[in-house]
View 1 (cartoon, helix red, strand yellow):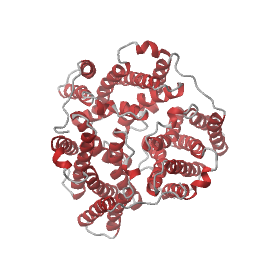
View 2: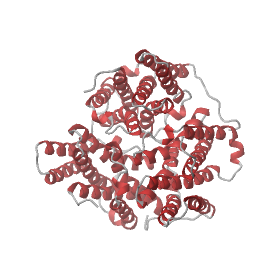
View 3: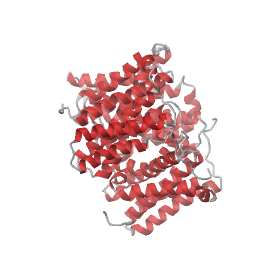
View 4: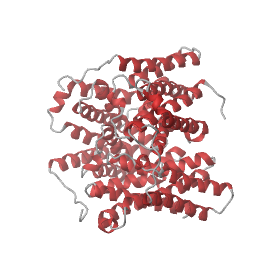
Length: 205
Length: 205
Length: 205
């Protein structure tokens, strides 16, 4: 097993919280235990698989390292067993999705940089990792993905990944920069929903 | 061309039967000849492409080896021409999908093991190969994928792939173990539908 | 940066026009600025990412070379700002999609051939590159992909890619052959829609 690093911690935690978002969405759609587990697993693992395939790092870590599967399974079971408690939080799917978005944008960008990818593609890969799992989760229940419907979604992921790339370029210590990136993405998502920020529609549409 | 081995046979047969399931679904949705061919091809080839990309084996065998394309095209044409006869079978999409599920779970796991992947990831890749094609087929006609709606679906694929991994670990001859895995997955699917096995929903949902 | 070659030109132009098709579809669905940008980016970049992942060329050019992102962003902004003018063209989504189909079928096949892939898989990769972006664009707005609904769609992409493979086999100069392939795919799409060509449905369906 690799040493526990902040990139791995964020990756596992992001896997878990995206898994919760998938499980909660499945419960909301009245799927049964297996539907909840499958949607949790898909939401939890898809972003990382997409990133690793795009980076040429195969087999993807999510399939190779049992800790990812354990995190995803744990998330599915938690969502199944504790959904009533989780529902008492305001907008649980949105909140867990926002946390996963930040964690994956940061860990995805960090992983790309650590493999020698240039800053701009690394930021793009962070965004792809972050929005990929949520998009698949939404598509699997035949919903238009939140990344299309929500105003500050891809931008929030972009902000977090950019913080990481800029921090690396400035030679700052990675762990505090990573925390800042996660917090920024999460805050942008949650505040934009709370404050009802709206983007303009196409003129004349 | 590679030598015909049991892994290749199962892969080609799985390609064909998933192609039939795709073609039958397209006919049911009243798509025309081209829609039938495209959905057959997508259902037939997607699982193998997903597996090979995740294994880093590029270009994917399904695109590189003409026999896969031939199997997929043959399946599409059969579904188009003989759908009335096939419809007389009970639940044809489900039955062909169950056969494909078993064949791909086993051949996917076998291929991963033969490329040196550890047992647990190999089982996961078998499941991914097995459910991937069916999920894409369902998504393309804007249906919630069977892997989410059906109770014993991913589990059936998991059972078949696990049989292969355990058999390899015990050093048993691969071909009979593979047949057992395919039969187990197929039986679990068909019996669970026939007997109406239901999984529990989330408590309080 | 690589030298500007006809394959790169077609790839960038295909990225741009698919981006327009995605942006126009987003405006039609009344998405806001961010939805338009995300759908443009997805439609513009997905085909190339799919092709590069299937070819093992990672990270994909679309993420590695900033010109692809610029083309995609430019397309999204154009669609957002000028959609009323673009709508005055007959069937803008279909026309831009047809152009992208041709450009990507040709550049995808060319890229595969240049990497040493055999002719038939190269043609298939051209088709995959061409239909992949459009299919993702349609799925993201929960529409059945045009490649399934339209009669002459995958076939048009196949024709263009085949022209490229045959031209390479005959040792002809690549640039005129490429132009012919693009024109053929585009013409097949537009004429089939204009003339209402219909394919047969399955007998007895």
